[in-house]
Amino acid sequence: MHFSVEDIKKLAHLSRLDLSEETLMKRRANLEKILDYVEQLQAIDVEGIEPMSHAVFMTQHRRPDEAKAVFGREALKVSAGYEEGLIKVPKIIE
Amino acid sequence: MKTLSEASRALELGKVSSVELTEGCLDAIKQKDAELGAYLEVDAQGALKSAQESDARRQGGQSLGPLDGVPIGIKDIIFCKGLESTAASKILEGYKAPYDAMVIQKLKAAGAVILGKTNQDEFAMGASGEHSAYKVTRNPHDLNRTPGGSSSGSAVAVAAGMGYGSLGTDTGGSVRQPAALTGIVGIKPTYGRVSRYGVIAFASSLDQIGAFGSSVEDAALMLQGIAGYDPRDSTSVDRPVPDYRAALKGDVRGKRIGVPKEFFSEGLEPEVKASVQEAIGLLEKQGVEVKEVSLPHASTAIATYYIICTAEASSNLARFDGIRYGPRKGDQEGLNALYEKTRGELFGDEVQRRILLGTYILSAGYYDAYYVRAQKVRALIAKDFSEVFKEVDAIVGPTTPTTAYKIGENIQDPLAEYLGDIYTAPVNLAGLPGISVPGKPTKKGLPVGVQFIAKPFEESLLLNLGYALEGALKDG
Image (tube, rainbow over all chains, first blue to last red; front, side):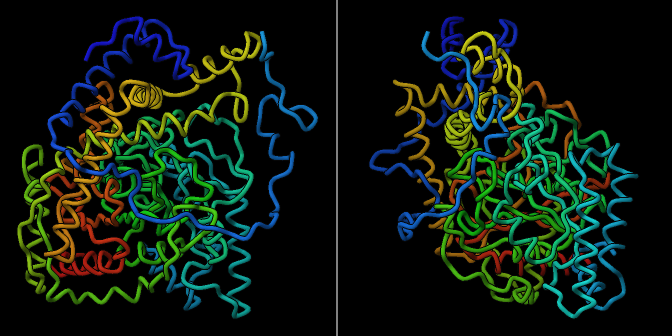
């Protein structure tokens, strides 16, 4: 597996990670090695096998449609942008 | 008193108070933890208050049971209301849990005393305790070695007498592996047995809360305190919880145990192999029937695991965007800069590696080739186990291929670190319960773990097998 500089930069952007050139190159080397390792799965015969998305088969629980207490605006205080019951963010529409 | 069970009995007999036990643990933390690095936050005041309340209850004849007044440690990734819950990451620095996780609600209702939050690999990603953003945790058996991870601090707290029990999380081995490397007992219950409400998610189809103790009985008591259905975790299973301590009969005659040949091949350290084989021999003497079995896809577990867990992690960790929690970076440069700088500066190396890999795997054009294929191989791994369980009641083997390695040894080679989970990750992929119980240590005195694996919800059998081994090693 080989990532071009452009590939790894695109991947970092998709991952919302701003990384220095040096860190990017280190991450690229790690990723290439790990992807080479997981390549072994391509050799396994999975014909007719259903993908397993969860460890146990279960149907989702249902509960009566009743209102329950939730956290109030207090819970927003954990944000660094908290101001008077709201969270302040940078301008979204350029 | 060394074990939780002994402490619990002494409390019951009035030989010791909870305040004395708690002060003992707090003193041990003061003396040892600067060197060991097991705790991120110690809540001395809160712990002593809970201990006083426990003593008052007991004096009034109102004890809440075997955990009442027993001091324990909690992995940082699990919410304890009012205490910091950073998952050992800088991206959550200063974040205080707004509520108690279900397991904490249960432990508090059982009277347990919470000493504080234990160190771990950041977001439970890592197997050495070196990936904490705050400090490295050291192995009390040899300070130059790692204690394993990711529940590094929880394991060391118990191994070094800085808590009688503790909680960890196990996604690919993060309870059993550090238990093995520090010489204590660690149990990972069946997926769905314990509610994850209030635990920061890493890989949701694999994560499960587990418990540490100095003995098998300790692990049984801790598991008893946390198991049970919770409608707030959609993967929680509504099924009665048995009496785990009552299962510790020590009689294992006629039990059929499978030894997977794949767990004894290449990469297994000779001294670990000898210790596990000796343990199997001791069980045979107690009347266990041992036979060789095969898990043909087990060797692919690490590749499968790293595709599934990184895909799920990249999605779960998208919520850490600098907006909702923790510190912000790049606030003045627009929204994208805020996201990218916060995550680029505040996530550690291992977390970034996994987010990048997971994002790649889930991206258009690669999803089927990696993610869907890994889910199919996962089904094959699970099927191997169910085939074997048609012939045997449980599986036994090593918990880890090696003893604890030196700090820094694998830091530049993530793949080498990942391979340490080769015997534990298949168990998570199949959603099964597993336990690590100490075998005979190596000549140098390094701990070795013996792992038992059973069918879903057969924790009682695992505990009884572990108990039988523990007894045989003591007698031998």
